[in-house]
Structures are given as structure tokens and as C-alpha cells.
Length: 194
Image (cartoon, rainbow, N blue to C red; front, side):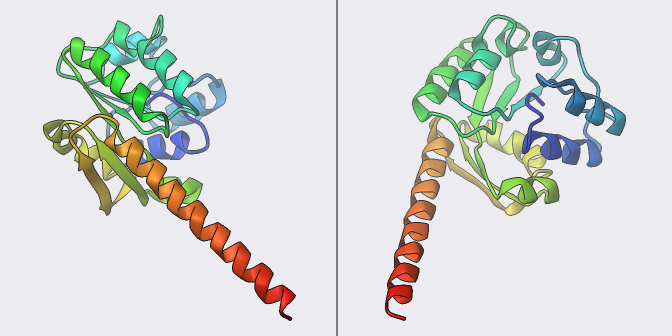
């Protein structure tokens, strides 16, 4: 599990609590130490983590972070074994996701994009909604792992094309923003009307 921020740390903790052997990596040492104390291990480098894992999960702030961590120097691709699955749970560009999926496929592995909805509370409680794009067989292989972090009824395989999960997340955000704007307008009108 790479990325132990506000969302990643509780997500990784849920995997440890469910008995998975979890290796962790993060820029900040504090969350790594916390997860190691809970039962995870911390390899010295990202390629070492990738070499020792059949599933690599990333939960990072933005597109450049994911690109650097997966395909940059000293990234996941430097140690990724054929047949592995990368699950990127960050919310990033679907275009970048497709590019990364091609690079991962060239190494004989698969990338699933699996952005989440549900916030920090959903991450802590393991009840996230997860929108997954990518290969169907890889999705089925990853489903038990995803079920440790998300509500089983809200883990949805959106489609087999890389980037499908990211597109679904964008649509979700647009719908939420539109609803919030409508509520704000309604409250403003009600207030002005007394």
C-alpha cells in the first residue's frame, strides 16, 4: 500500500486488520511506523515493495504523484512482477490512467483504476464506495481486497476500459456539486422570502 495520508492510512489499516500481509510506503515516516506497529511491514524502497507484492495499491493526492510513484525512477514499475495487479485508488485524470495502464500492460501486469467516495469516515469504517475500471478478471481477483476497504454492495466494476472508474468518479463529483449548488440556491431563496 503506497500512500498513507488521510484516506490511505485507515484503508491500509483495514487490510492489516483483515489479516492480509501488507507492506507500506509513504513519504511521512509517522504513518509507516503506525502501520508497522499494527502488523504491516515496510520495505526500504518502492521497487522492493512491488517485487514482493502481487497486488500494489496506491492512494495518492494527484495525477503527477501517481505517475511518479508508478512509472518514475524508483517507482513501482522498477520492481513489478508479471501477473501483478496495481490498484490506483486515487482520484486522477482518466487520460493519465490510460497511459499508465498501457505502461503497466507492457510489463505483463494490469492496472485497475478504483477511485473512492465516502470520505475519511468511510475509509475508517471500511464502507467506501469504489468505482473500478479495467480488466474484468483482474477486478474479480482484487474484489476480496477491495471488500476490506469498501462496502461490498458499493464496489462497482464500471467497465473494462482503463479510466472508466475515474470517469465515473468525475460524474459523481459533478452530480454532487450540482446538488449542493441547488440546495444553496434554494436556501438563499427561502431566506430572502422570509
